[in-house]
Length: 542
Image (cartoon, rainbow, N blue to C red; front, side, top):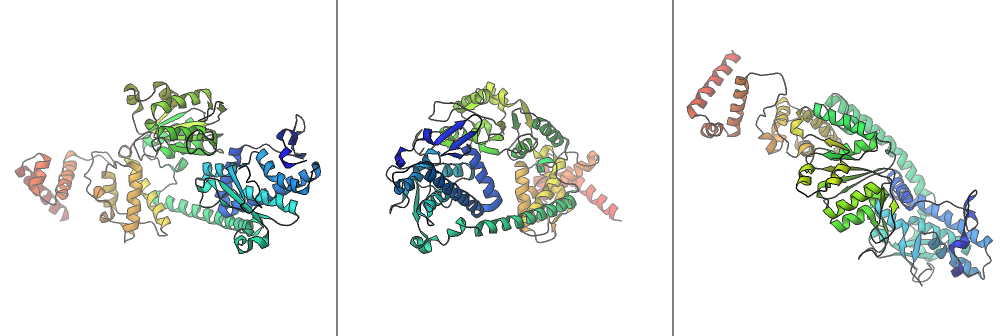
């Protein structure tokens, strides 16, 4: 038998009772995206080095086993044919597609791979890599060739699609032939890197657990009580209502539409929907509909076939498929182009997608949570957003109030952000002076929670004392005038007027003429009021 005579129909056996056999050995059929998610989890738990060690050694064992199975299960015309069968076998398993005529990594010019499922999945789940990332492929080729050659062969990758190269390229050599070039790669074929990674993971978990306990204690001391569900701070009635509705909506499979101004924490609410749902064990995949053109957004959401457009050198799974069993968060939904709105509506209704450049539909199992800072009802009335998609998305609608309408949350949020920012800088969190706390509540926070977080990070970076001073606040916050909001006990109109007049006077640097003009009162009236305030102040001091 010759290597080129291998056919998938002769290698694959399917028995309804026994399951699947490949090359005579028990085999499993695994989803490529699921394997990509496993890779992501390994990277998150073990780091890049630990994940590479696991996948390289797994690939080595896989390749060795395949070489054994083909050696004993088939009558080869020569030993060379058996050795050459490894690359074709990998192709038949759907793991790679080699370039014709360049399929032997032991050849002087190595082997070029036009498609690698590993590179595809790395890009999908982890983004562009800084180094070649087809770790399982290197392990498989090394294991197969080592068994076939009867001595250790090490296959390394020097170009990779995951890194941005046009194709993946592999070369195989013995230990002696590689020389010093193999030194940095050899530990991944052995146990040192994995053992070290596992030790680092165990230590990191202990450190993380300790930091979480410290952060929780710090927050309880600073805020007075721990954060709410999903890390949300909800002292105000409006936010408590949002959290309650979010937790109730999470228990269903209903599509959720989150409406609110920029910076109010819509993504945090979406994360709470996911974490409180039955899909919490699945992925939470997020994408901004405003960040991509219509064609790129379609390719990201639905995926594409190889050759579907210029630059599509390999097929790609879309996010609606990649989020299988989990939640897809569509941020800035109001920015989605009309053409994409129709396609998304059909995908949600039919529970299936069609990749760009394909003619077949693929089922999807995903929950969609969308968010927008636009009034979609007005967009629908103006004809800029599809009415049918709007009603499809707002099965449950959550409106996150702006920070100026939930002033009870300002100080608890500020203290949480102070603790977080101080922890990142390795400092103790500074306290808030009474006048600083009052000024924070006066400000309208047009940037909402995001602006408050940035302000507190600035405070921690610039403060020189153990307590935050007024001068540490951003200029806009320092200049804020009192707002007509009930934040404490009821005061008389005279007291409110006094506070407001003095605040405007201070804002104008003591300029009485400008103050009277801005307040719309005569200069004599202002002078009389200020004199009465002075007399009242002297009387209180006696």
